[in-house]
Structure formats: structure tokens, C-alpha cells
Image 1 (cartoon, rainbow, N blue to C red):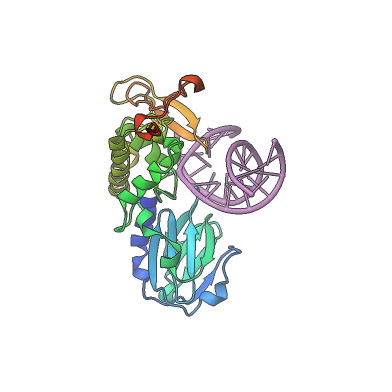
Image 2 (image 1 turned 135 degrees about the horizontal axis):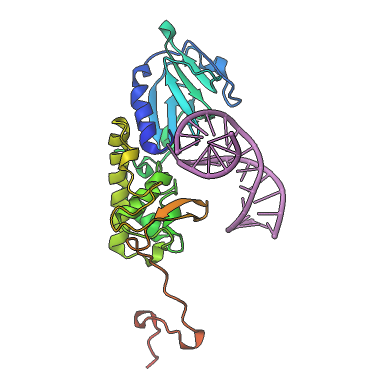
Amino acid sequence: MPEGPSIVILREEAAGFVGRTIEHASGNSKAVDFAALAGQPVVALRSWGKHFLIQLPDLALRIHLMMFGSYRINERKETAPRLSIGFTDGEELNFYACSVKTLPPDLDAQYDWRVDLMSDQWDPELALQKLRAAPDMLVCDAVLSQDIFAGAGNIFKNEVLFRIRVHPLSTLGALPEDKLRELVHEMRVYAFDFLRWKKAYVLRQHWEAHTRQICPRCLIPFHRAHLGRTHRRSFYCIQCQRLYEPAPLTPTRSRSRPRSQRTPPAS
DNA sequence: TGGAATGTTGGAAC
DNA sequence: CGTTCCAACATTCC
């Protein structure tokens, strides 16, 4: 369920509830005052990255499906819902095994929509600035950063790094500017490929790297390892994906600053 | 069939 | 005090 495009699909599937009034709500979430939801109209349904947002007049609900979360519209699963929102005529929106939080109602004050890969307001230049500002960060961590690429997940990481032929342990500061731009561009392209393929139930068959054994380009086996700050699964081809490393430190004795940064000799 | 996984949080440990 | 590590959450798939 969880990556950003899947949340866009949820938002689209639930769009019919916008403008309708909640009749009753229940569930095993400890973060929701269910009684307070009754009688409130759904002002809007929005998404930011992997967050699904239900805008009500007095508050907003933030649903995060995490790894295992799921939802049903006008259906129920066997297990108890974390949050069930009932409307007239028995229609309902049910969420399972997810994180639910209550937020203040002004979502624009709490979210920067420019960071959301799926948003009309997505701002590639802002992402580029943030990448440039973190030269020591590994690229495999950068593509998972929700502060830079909200909505990207581990599938994005493996697919996009394979597409742009960059080794996951590359350091941002060692990537040439045009590679950084290509990374930002391809994240957005893949986001909409993901959305289209997921809707057509063909997402998995388009994976070129994620969970794959053999590099489809050069036919040697993929490397697999748990890399980066969060030790997430990485699938990568050491022949096709270049490792960009920081320049090694030169010994102090011979280190000199670039000519442009030297203090001009006093005359 | 057990283990791993499309993810995040919060708290312990250092 | 900042950084890092890890458990917890709970479901599905191979």
C-alpha cells in the first residue's frame, strides 16, 4: 500500500466522500475522539507524501498506512478497523493497521506541498537546493528522505538509482550537478510511472532492479545489501551503477586551498 | 512455514 | 546534547 502514488489512488477512490457528513465513527485508534467526528462534513481529502489527510471543519485526520496498513471503501475486513468513518446509506471508509493522528485543521500551515512528489506544487529546484545542502549524505538515504522527496519509498530508491545509473553508496557532494538534476527529474518521472502502473496492476512487472536477481542491462547478478542510515534493502548493479565518492583527504602538509579562496599576498 | 518486508516513531544507549 | 541504534507496530507474501 504505502508509497506516495498509492496514497493518491486512495484519495481518488475516496473522493466521493468529499462534501458528505460523517454520521458516526469508531475504531481502536487511541488518537481519535470518535464522538467529535459525528456531524462534521468532509471538507477535503488531500495527500502529502505517504500521508492521507481528511480535512474536517475543526480538525484534520492524518492516516499513515506504514508497511502493513490497508483500507476498504464500503467494505469491511475480518479484523477490527483502526478507524471507521460511517456516512449515510451505510457507506463507510475503513482503515486497518495504520497510524492515525489528529491534527489542527489548517493543513497549509503544517505541510509544504512543494516537497510532495505527487503534488501540482512539486518544486524540483527546492529539492535540488536541499540535496546541495547535504554533501555528506548518501544518495540511498537522500532518495528516502521525506523532507526532500515526500512519498518516495524503497521501491523508488532501487528503481530510480538504477535508471540514472548511480550506485546507492554514492555521496551527494560527489555527484556532478547534472546527475543531481537527473535524480530529481527521474524521481518525479518514476512517481507517475508508479501511479500509472499501479492503477493497471502491472507495477511489479515493471520493476527493473527492486527484488530482481539479474541486471536487465548487462545480465550480471545484482548486488543486494542493506545500506544507508536505515539499512533498507538495496538492489544494484556494480557494472552499470557508478559509485561517486568524495575526493580523499590530502595530507595536511600538502593541502592547499583553491587559488580562488587564497588570501592574496599583501603588497 | 518462518522470516522478511513498499515505513515511521520514540526511547535507550552512547 | 546530538547521533545512532533498535524494538515495536501488525500484515502479507514467498
